[in-house]
Image 1 (tube, protein in one colour):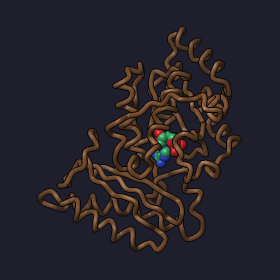
Image 2 (cartoon, rainbow, N blue to C red):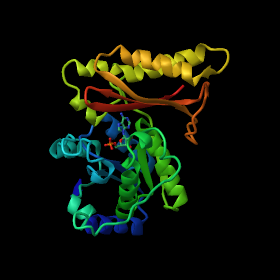
Image 3 (tube, protein in one colour):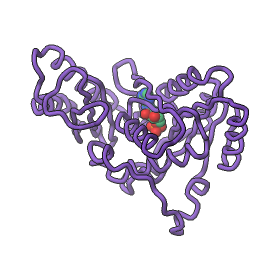
Length: 288
Ligand code: AMP
């Protein structure tokens, strides 16, 4: 497995692969890898085959964090991440530095961003106004560096995957986006690097997110006609309130493709929510 730190070396390797007709599957991550990330690498391998190459990037992208967010304390463990990638049969791990990705940014010599203007407005975009601009910018940069034939994203970040798909379509990136299912802990909590912040009695409280989705799904399945989003939102607020350290940021019911909010919720409507558990902001989503 190659560990590559410079953009020029990664691009040179990617070009060599492309010249030989080798298919490249790419999984962008911020590291502190868990089985959710590794499931994406497995999906990439399945798609490119034994003869293809799987590239994982590990980069905690500063432009997607607001100044008040957890950039400096975001969990990192490169040694462990590399061991996990090696075990998974990943061909190359791209680990750039900030100086490599955003040269001159501190001096004001970085000024190009990619902004998706529609899907990024609501939910995560409303709560974290500069977040998706950072995500689309870094993902576009990574696509230009890794030159993949396909890239795998997790359904865990449903809105992010929808925005990336739109960016790829709108800007004609010559690659395919694959969305892989959310991997969960045995109690239903979605795996996340940020779960590391949930110490002591906070961790069991994280269950309110997946429980809210399960209850909404059951309600919709049992109803003979569409259920009002307002009613479901009240039910979710109640569930979140059962955890003493949890605070609901938002819950939304929307069309899974257009992300347009739905006042009447039926089977197939998508649900997403963000909840602070202590100081940690967790997100989850699912199809109802
Ligand atoms: P992150 O490192 O959090 O930026 O995530 C990198 C990629 O892994 C994104 O495409 C996420 O959607 C995906 N991912 C994160 N958590 C999970 C999970 N529990 N199941 C599946 N994919 C995930």
